[in-house]
Image 1 (cartoon, rainbow, N blue to C red):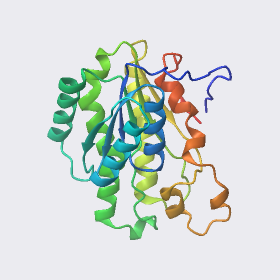
Image 2 (tube, rainbow, N blue to C red):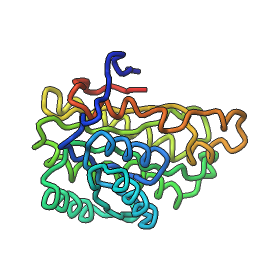
Image 3 (cartoon, helix red, strand yellow):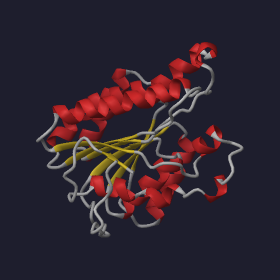
Image 4 (tube, helix red, strand yellow):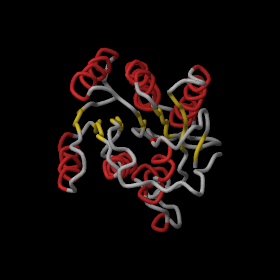
Length: 244
């Protein structure tokens, strides 16, 4: 695990001029990250499936006086390669390029004994957690390659042991994908890293551990944003690392 340097101090306009795409933008981490990026000057592309929620987040960012974001409603469960190609085309034509991509969207599925796992749930979880990041990253790589300094971030989880079924497998796949890309883009303008923020008070955490003691005492996503801000900034030079 890698930590953000102690001397990193995110300046208010640190991300001014950068365009960053955030998936799962209305979720616990997605919303917190989107607000933080916009607050530091970035133009954020808000990708989420619930139009009402994403419009609410758009209004919140605009009311705060931050750079006006872009909305892109999309349900990752059913999105195709063509949908992602159109997304990348629209970002380039309307916003001029892309400097960062953060994969926050995630589906927990229904953790269970492997032999009793549900096939439909398995496919849906893999589609959201692994196939969608693959297809979206692949579509956006040409834009990221044109950026002076681009950052690709995969949000991962360390669920291990038994019974996590499709969720555990999909998250392990993300780690492998990030490592592959980091090696392929070593020495280029594109940095590829993972962030594992640990247990946080999110809907996914509460769904995974509904009766766990101390859920109310867990940190909020807003308390775990330092790594994301650092990796999107021009201060970061790391590649192929897992940040906490």
